[in-house]
Length: 409
Image 1 (cartoon, rainbow, N blue to C red):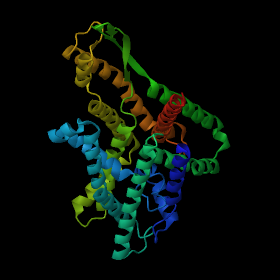
Image 2 (image 1 turned 180 degrees about the vertical axis):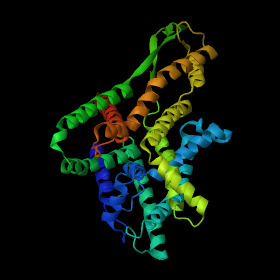
Image 3 (image 1 turned 90 degrees about the vertical axis):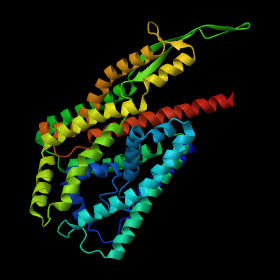
Image 4 (image 1 turned 90 degrees about the horizontal axis):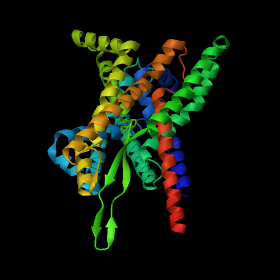
C-alpha cells in the first residue's frame, strides 16, 4: 500500500505539471528554453514544469534554496548551530523556518521568472495585467507549497525521500520526449558516434553506482567490560566512511550559483543605463562560453562537495561518541587523535568523490563538444540524481520488507 500511495502522489504531481498558467505561448516558451542552457538546468529541477509554465513551474526549487540558506546560516550563527544539535526537536524547528522562508522565495522567484519572460520581445507573454500577474504569482507559490506537502507525505511512508522522488519523477517523465527528439534528429552517418555515446552512458551509470556505494571501513574495537557475571563489549566492528557523503547536494548548490549571475544579467541587458547594460551583456556572453561555464561549474561542484561534507560529517563528535561507548580505532589514541585520524581519512577519500561529481556535472558539455550531438537523452546531473534516488529508494524498500518479516515472526 505504501508503494501504491507514493505512485499515486507522483501521478498527481505529473498531472499538475501539465496545468499551465493562462496567457502563455507554450511553443515560444519551449523554443526559448531549448536555446538557453542555464534555464534548461532550472527546468530539470522543476520536474519539467517550467517549460509548460504550469502552476508547479518552480518545482521544489525555492525549498532547496531555503535549505541552502539555512545550512549556510547554521555555519555562521551559533544559536542555529546549537539548535541543529538538539536532535529531532531542533531539526523540526529549523524545518518549520525553512517552510516559512520558502513562501517569500517562491513569490520572488515566480515574479522574476515572469518578468524575464515578458522581456522576450513579447512573444511568450504577449500581455498580462497587474491582476493576472498577482494571480499567477499566488498560484505558482501555492503550487510549490503543494509539492512540498506531497514530498512530506511521501517521506512519511519511509520509501525514499519525497523531494528527491519528485525531482526524479520530473526527470524520468522527460525521457520519452527526449528520445523522440533524438530520433527525429538521428543521422545515420553518425551511427558509431551514437554507439559511443551509449557506451559512455552505460559506463557512467556503473561509475555512479560504484562511487555511491563505495566506502572506507575504519576498524573499531570495543573494550571488554565485566559487570557482575556478565561480559559486555570485546567485539570488533567497523565505521563506514562513504566516498561520496554529500550525494547530489553539491551539484544542486553549484547549479544555484552558476545560474544566478546570467539570470540577473538578463533583466538588465536592455537597461537605459549604458554601463549596466554593457556589464549585463558581457556577463551573459561569458557564461554562454562553454569552456568558462564548464570550468566554473566543475570548480563549484568540487568546492561544495568539501563544504557540505564538512557540514554533515563531524569527526570530533564521532570520536567523542566512540570514547563514551568504550570504542577505539586500533593503533590510534581515543579522543582528539581519533578525530584527527577520521578527518584525515575523510579528506583523502573525499577527493575522489568530489572529482567524480565534478566530471558528472560537466559530462554533457564534454560529450556535446566531442561528438557534435546537441541532443542527449539525459544529462550527467540528471543521471546522477536518477541513479542515486533509485539506490536510496531500493534500500528503504528493503528495510521496510525486513521490518515486516521481523513483525511476522
